[in-house]
Length: 150
Length: 96
Image (cartoon, rainbow over all chains, first blue to last red):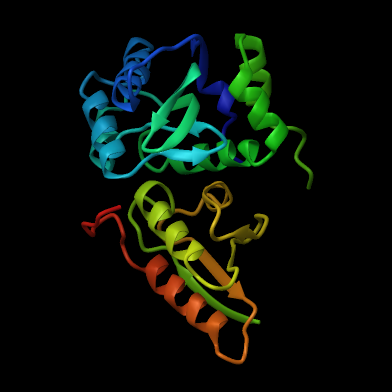
């Protein structure tokens, strides 16, 4: 099992009330949070934009998961996540996004991270609560998986 | 029911561009295709979240299955998607 999402998410990397004119500005803001947290070198942000232009990181349920291209891996200092809430919503290549989860992962680290995130978002109630979450405690609780069913 | 088992060819695994291409192709099929990875819940191949939840990296074995009909729509869908999965979609330019 992958490490817990919440181990990768510093409380100071969870931001509320985000405002951006478009997805491009939002990706820059999300990238800046990762830079501030010391997870990535500043150049990572441009490669997040490059990834987003190549293919939308919208995954459904009002959530986008901006992250760098393959080439950006060298700019990752340590694996980390950040969450930025956009309560007014963003037009994300035609999809409505309320929650951005920025991902910094070296190697293949992003795959188990994405898988864990996707499993959480496949629960509609939990995804809805995440979109509306307004406190660090709520976000951390929603990203903590329930007991493994098996 | 028809099945095809392949290993993921994309360098970054089944996420981002490769996942987007795969999910789009699955959604365009006339039949519902399931993607199965050992130890994970079978995924609707046309659902981005379900496909991401498989956590498939390059080299992961994925079984695709669909119900077949007299016209062979299931077989054709499974064959087409298996070919996509086996390719390195990161290495190919595309319009996304």
